[in-house]
Image (cartoon, rainbow, N blue to C red; front, side):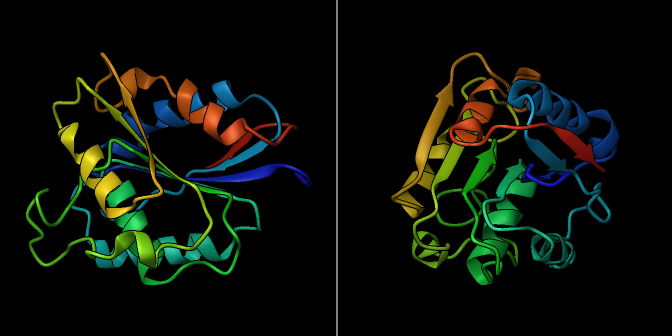
Length: 193
């Protein structure tokens, strides 16, 4: 629909995540946003064994279809691969914001890189002037909450949102994420899978 602000939601990894876990996050985000948004929710290749190279290629195709003012949201390893992809090659569209939800930090002081890692100059390599928000539940038993601080160190302009009592899925409640996105755009919401 013309006039709707685009949101690209990148799922996390793991068997069944697209249909059994992160679809609940997308639905929660749509409810919290209200009207005026088009949520794109592509199924990533081999979700049970995320390959950063294959996911980055899929993400670049999705990013190429975005318009200026779009917001990108990545959950869990999807957020990690998303931010790495943006640092490697920013999209042509001018993004309104980058939002990471429960994203593990892969690299120095975080999870072992194992052939893939976030660059030390991550913040400098991301598109300039675009807000970055890092959301992490303090009850997350999958990706340590301390990883939010590692993102803050790597991306000095990032705003970190630590949410008490929230798990890796933020208890399927993305109100705070919606508040960040909603800050300046009215309209209608629809989900494109």
